[in-house]
Amino acid sequence: MPAAGPRLSFVASVRLELAKMRRLRTMPVVVVLVLTALLFAAPLSESSRAGLTDASTHPWEVLLLQYAIINALFSPILVAVLASRHTDIEHEGSGWYLAAGAGLTPGRLCRAKLAALALVEVPALLVQTAALLALTGLLGATVPLPWGAWAGYTVLLIGVALAFTALHILLAAAVDNQIVCVGIGLLGAFIAMYMFLAPQWVARILPWGYWAMICPVVQTGRTLGAIDTIVPPLDWIAGFGALVTVGFALATARLDRIER
Image 1 (cartoon, rainbow, N blue to C red):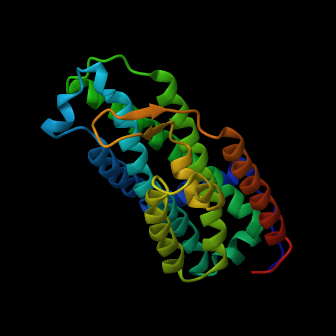
Image 2 (cartoon, helix red, strand yellow):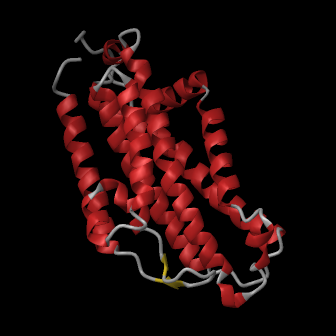
């Protein structure tokens, strides 16, 4: 590794990563995936809109369950693609060495990438949820919105998305072939969807199960509105977040001590 130059501050390194995003056209990718998820989740069909004015069918809870399933499909792909595109640039043109010359060790660079991607993902998921609620209201929903369930789910969704972003950054940094990173994201999306049907103990031991565990709504029957509101296992979710946080900190600290 070349001798490090003047050490950049963390804020400066995050700004540098945001500049890379503009060159990589990250925002169009985010917009396309967010709009796709929004269109799949929105109650656009007549049958979906039929219950928006009937409180007995629990339209907002049904929509939340549908939204959680759609997020379990699209969010793993979103974070895998973003982490892969944003880290692959370092594998091309000796980016790790060039960054080290600017005082950015591989670990610091990965932490800066996570912070920069968080600045993109958090607003994107907030806008996605807000847009779905606004669109559903425009489509005729008159039943009072359960703000607590939706707000809680959105916060947990952001947390799980950032956790997977951290994991995919480490994976993308470890392998040169980014097909591996994106492929795991695609596989994880299908596993995450299956976790809505799997026993909860299975979801707890598989990372992708947490896309399902954060949902506060469960299906209790086959008819429309046959659902129940639950409290997600916050202790397990917090434990998963803490495990990823510690793992990411230790892994990036180790990257700071090795040569690329």
